[in-house]
Length: 157
Picture 1 (cartoon, rainbow, N blue to C red):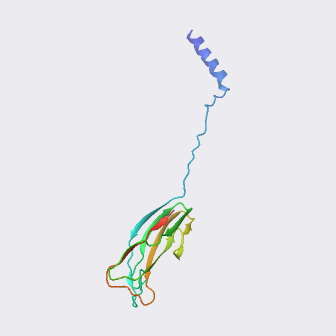
Picture 2 (picture 1 turned 45 degrees about the vertical axis):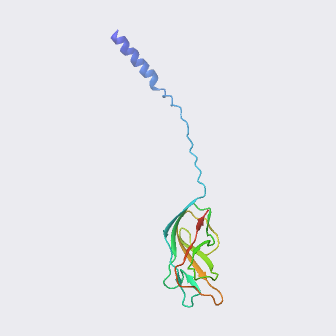
Picture 3 (picture 1 turned 30 degrees about the vertical axis):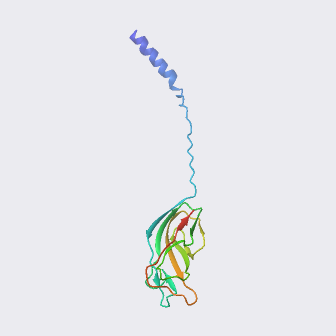
């Protein structure tokens, strides 16, 4: 009986040797993702305005002044701009009109020459933004002694 079982097993093994094993079923899993155009703004430093020798310009471009700095990270497909200045603090002795002009420039993933106009950021990546502000007086008007402060909003949308 042992011989018979061994012989039967050998026959079955020989019969199956020429056949291939059936493949296990397979399936493909697809992955989709969507990234909307986006950006983030991180303020690195505030700016400093200094007055010109004729007292008609208070600007980050004047000697001793400095631009504010921000970092913009984007996917591209957005626009970078500065809003008009709406928040200012001036000394009570300064009663004449000041025209405030914010501008910006970028380096890094995208280079933009200094402008005050909304500009498309088409390239994904990180850019450093220099934000400048100039306040000007016209005619015979001059800046008064005291502390001045203005807020520039950098917008990326």
